[in-house]
Amino acid sequence: MRKSLCFTSWALLCFCCCITQAEIFTSIGQMTDLIHTEKELVQSLREYIKAEESKLAEVKSWAKKLDALTRVSTSDPEGYLAHPVNAYKLMKRLNTEWSELESLVLQNPSDGFISNMSIHRQYFPDEEDETGAAKALMRLQDTYQLDSEAFSRGKLPGMHPNAILTVDDCYDMGKTAYNDADYYHAVLWMQQSLKQLDAGEEAVVSKADILDYLSYSVYQMGDLPRAIELTRRLVAIDANHQRAGGNLRYFERLLFKQMNTLNQEQQPASEEPIQLGTYSRPKDHLPEREIYEALCRGEGLQMNEARQSRLFCRYQDGKQNPRLLLKPVKEEDEWDSPHIVRYLNVLSDEEIEKIKELAKPRLARATVRDPKTGVLTTANYRVSKSAWLEEEDDPVIFRVNQRIQDITGLAVDTAELLQVANYGVGGQYEPHYDFSRKDEPDAFKRLGTGNRVATFLNYMSDVEAGGATVFPDFGAAIRPRKGTAVFWYNLFKSGEGDYRTRHAACPVLVGSKWVSNKWIHERGQEFRRPCGLTEVD
Image (cartoon, rainbow, N blue to C red; front, side, top):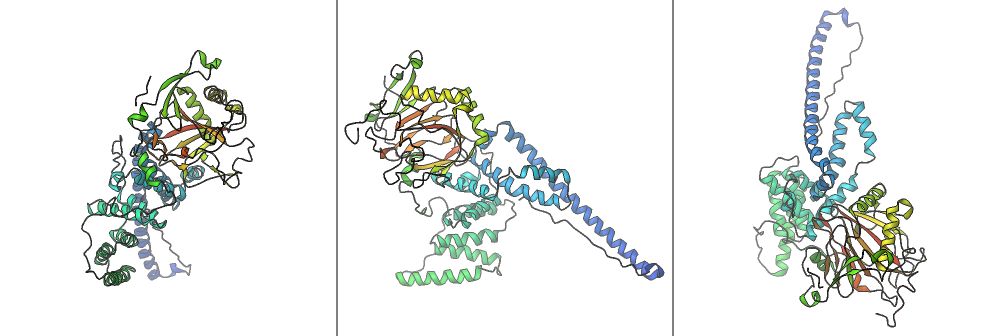
């Protein structure tokens, strides 16, 4: 049968009064001076109490806001974090705002609070985490072509817009990009910050600060007329700004020189607002970036009626494997060449929860194998957390490994451990090969089990938006479906790598993506998958 398809810190008022003991009591005149001194001290005391009350009111306001927030977030942690804006703001809140609260309380130490902060601080995200979350939002923005307005207002597919970014949030996003010399994103987020500020939204950051970053970022993007217009706005607000005047004169001279060189008249700055598409995104290290991201959005798919007619579904008994005879696995073709199949109901909900339970305490930044040394290391193109599970950890791991062997007919005793991965906000794995190429012969030398002959990928969650597995070479996109698994061969029967299998895990836009995979190696498959007669058999 055919298959159908800022928190703002307060300064604590301190006072100090030094009185010298020089027999002051012997002079009424001097003592009357003390009366005035005492009055000043009382006034200082009142100011101190006022500052304390103001501080306490600020803490109460923060506690009330956090109480309401945690009631929502703890009722469904994964659902709350499924919204990337919520995930980013959690990183920012714990790294920045709680630290400011700690500083506030430390000014008049509260032992219980500080003790709690000290205990939990080891688990807090740091500045690198906050920066990473900001970059993840920018990655989602690029991949799914979402403007800053959509993110700022929480308007994401299938999500209620209940998570918003303030003027200060957008400004911090822009600064993160700016500090990384990423002027493309700095422009988008500073512009959004300015837009919200101009609309009357309250903020800690000043318009002058936003215009300062925005004008220079626009200049870096090559738009001199607009950079000049923005800098003039900055000078109008703050005529004594330390950089604005010099920048303005420099920009104007540069534009004049360009116009003379091109023999053109100076054109006014565009009146169109800056938005997604105003400037071209700079190219990066990934040659197939545009194809990859289009597939993630569901564009450029090469599935057609002719190919669809070659896709079927069937029952798979693993070549009459006794464990599958009475309950064969449902198998669906996802692609014809290279052949990619999906197996249904491979993992039960109970098994998935057990695997996640085993993996969670061990989750660490996911690694890739260095092609030159064979050593596992982190990489910017793989953003997720992973854990490796052995059969000795729990009987469920043994059962899963056995099931993979039964279904594929391939030996798993030489395979790598079951790897569990969780892709959170903007989690992705850019286009890569699972097998080692000829120019990296030592990639799996330490394992002594040959190359990765095949990949068995379990989907352990549904994903509301994003998170597809895509193959840029032939234009396929496979969506995660909880409990199913996809399987493909990375090598031809000759042992040569099938370069068409270069694939990627798209960034998760909404949701939390859990997968587990088994990389099956060549050793042990000599009689299970005999060599072919030609290089591409």
